[in-house]
View (spheres, rainbow, N blue to C red):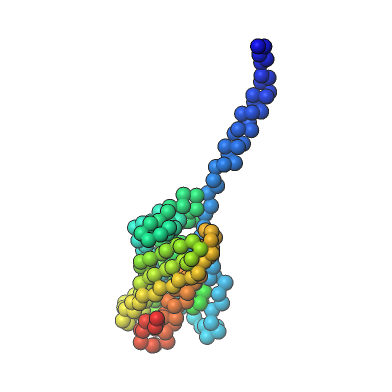
Length: 213
């Protein structure tokens, strides 16, 4: 049997094709954000011409299993998957806090001064949120369960009772990660609207009261 040497060009081409095939099979990381969805909400007409309402959106807390960059997806009763190639753009707690801050500010015509300072003599509303459940069920629903609080401070001192409430929002979603993110954004938008109503009620002198349901 006679053997013929394989041209170097053919070998190089085969290596190039194999490299392309390997690269094409490597999943591409995708990054998602929860912020920005409510930024286009116009403040109610009642805020027109009034001084800005100042609030502090305190750092949000989330369960330990969610303190990771990967999306956590529910796969059944008591089981989850970590979506290695589908990640949050920032720490999930910060993503949630930013979403709530933007939504509350947009609805109140307010200013979040957590990282700065409110003007001297102004009334400030301190807001906290502890997210107890943040569930992603592909093809079913996205759920946000949070305990939140609002407290009015005048000249830096507590000026009213602490309002602490719990809200649960569940949004139907289709298949895919984009649908899950959209569902969570919608749930957080409803949560920010609920908290904004509580702040507005306190600003108008109403006694703190948790929303029904």
